[in-house]
Length: 280
Image 1: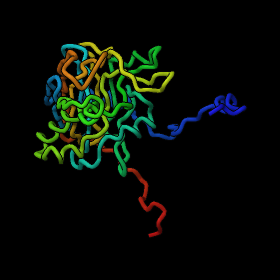
Image 2: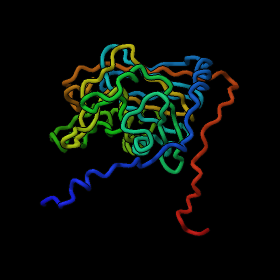
Image 3: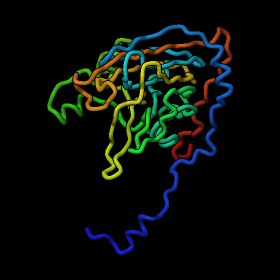
Image 4: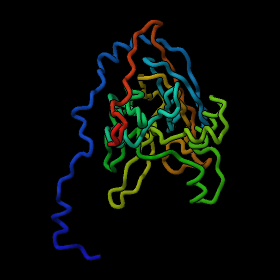
């Protein structure tokens, strides 16, 4: 269709932020730093390449994801350990914080709870910022690589996609069947992944992650958490995923717990009354 006469004027209209966060209560980072100093390591899990593992973190505890052998991207799911229906809501987290997360930002849970589940307290890649291509690290854009899209695009059957890895891990951890576990797997935080949107077509892109062995991202658990992390088959996601082509490396998850008797206050459930406009 031909452009209207006022096309340039329409394009020139300034954008507005959909969800201004001026009134959003932010985390008290100095208090978190003091609290973090009281935590003690209670366990660790080495997530093998092209596989996933679960871990549990008590409210007020912390968990750290570290690159240990080579550049590797991880796909992270978290749930309320007491109620798996409350899980990470990447879309709302993206709407509140932006397309990529770093220190001081939070992972928000699904409706109706809509509360912080975890707060990022350290990120050795926070220096990366936004590169000249528009790429940044730790994205909440992509959903996770999955066998359904792979079959749609290639016709193949590949079983080490992050979706399948997370499904198997959750099934092992909970005793659920794969069919049951799969319903709980959700859009992820792409840990260490460097992504963005092309400026000419708006398509989702990935590029080589800047992560190196020793880099880590660390979170405070705002509530009791069950987590699952997949070591993506794309490795550093510099070229391909959903295949065995990329060099892949393990990721280390360390868990830290507060001292016995710590008085940790979990964020309250969202205050919306859920009447949806229908009188009592």
